[in-house]
Amino acid sequence: MTLKLRSVGASDRGLIRSGNQDALHAGSWLVAVADGMGGMAAGDLASRIAMDAMAPLDVETPEDALVAALSSGIDLATARIRRAVEEDPERQGMGTTLTALLFARTGSCLALAHVGDSRAYLYREGVLKQVTRDDTFVQMLVDQGVITPEQASSHPRRAVVTQALQGDEVSPAYATMVPRPGDRWLLCSDGLSNVVRADTLAEVLGGYPDPGACAAKLIDLALRAGGPDNVTVLIADVVEEPA
Image 1: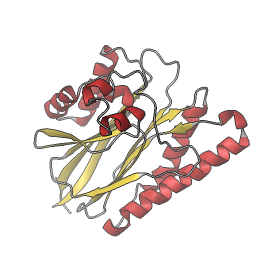
Image 2: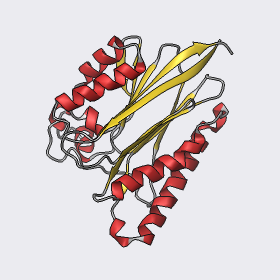
Image 3: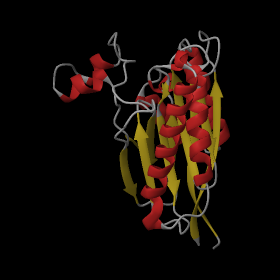
Image 4: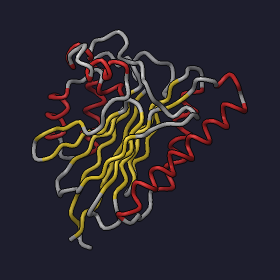
């Protein structure tokens, strides 16, 4: 038996925004979520550029090449966003978050890349853990002990990101982990994590075995909470299959 990744993604523009600037990729080896910013069509373009740059990584990749592959995808996305801004100065300031997970061809390892405030959570044996750290102004305040995590959730500047893919030099966070059978990954834009509590996320991830139904339930909860932003949810299950 070998470990495989089985993923399902869903996205909704929410109840307030006129369009959806999120993008996702739910593949067999790569899963990724991007949340565009910059107004007009620019945020939508930035997230799509990022996803188009990452999508070719959805192939069988050796364990020792995972982080390098993710890094090359981010470099390509950065270059393409920079070119798009040069082509149209009105796009100045556009950018996108990116949270991506790449599964090794052997199933023995996975790598995670992260920029911005979209999140990756791991639900393992009934316990939910936020694996990524938000690149935001309020997270910086939390790290400095100025405010508590509870205060951060309602802070007026909680949407201010300190790092995103905008065509400039960026310092993504990378991590590698050993997957286990039964692991469930949640990748999401802040349209979910800003309005649905972590304990509720854990309850749904554990209560809906079918990944599609789980994703749909999480989006429904975000909409019931007011749906103030685009909401994108990606569920990726680690399963055992014959080699």
